[in-house]
Amino acid sequence: MRVSLFVTCLTDLYFPEVAESVVRVLHRLGVKCDFPVDQTCCGQPALNSGFIDEARAVAARMIRVFESAETVVTPSGSCCSIVREYFPHLTEHDPALHARAVALADKTFEFTEFLAKRLKVDLSAWDLPYPAKATFHYSCHNRGIGMTVEDITSVFRHFRGLEYRPLVKLDQCCGFGGTFAVKYGDISGSMLADKIECVKATGADLLICNDGGCTLNIVGGLHRQGIDIRVKHVAEMLDEAMRNGNNSHLTRGRGEASVAGIPRRSGSCACGHDRAGGGCS
Image 1: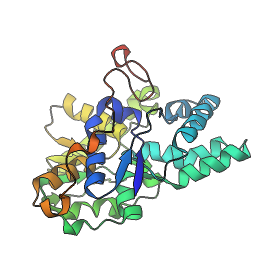
Image 2: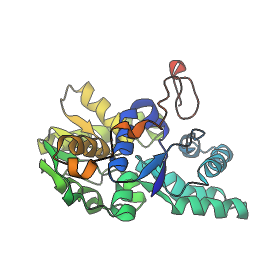
Image 3: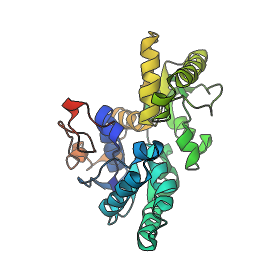
């Protein structure tokens, strides 16, 4: 099987190690991965701000870039939801483009969703040491694409030494919401403060969060309060555990060169904007 990586702007700008972990994990599972270098933002900032024509133009470009992909995998439930839920709506005015948008939506998966529902991987065969007391942020967009708590947390039970502590108000938004956090800062801040209190109440030393926007928001809140809780994407955890566990019999012939074909952009974000100039908005 071959997948094309949709890296997303926030992952490219702030969490490139997550994208690299996605590729290494897929490689170890026998999945080949390529990276369409012409990919850009999915158009979510424009869509959230009401710039429909601009979002439609970005959607059309993304459809063209990923059209030849067998399967598209992204580490972000948020951006996955835009492709799956909104690209078909944005292209309803153009029957031919709409059909292509639906085809892309049907083959686009969030990383954890891909492992569970498309690849149907059996992680019980792997030795996955990850000692930690962990809780999990169930993002709004993961719910939007139909990922249940059980779908995602089923991965956690395979980590040896991980004590999972469910979060109170599990399905409550962290307050990021893309441009919502900018437009309604006070409301967003209050929502974040409540989320952080729930995280603290678990006594966890690790928060698992699979969306870049939520991670940025929560990490910022934890830092401002001086709270020492690590935040990890599940792809990073799987990558580390696969490497540290007794898995040589499963990874023989699949080295660490799995990210060689994935260019790491030092000068620009996925939208093509200059990082030194502030990156994408």
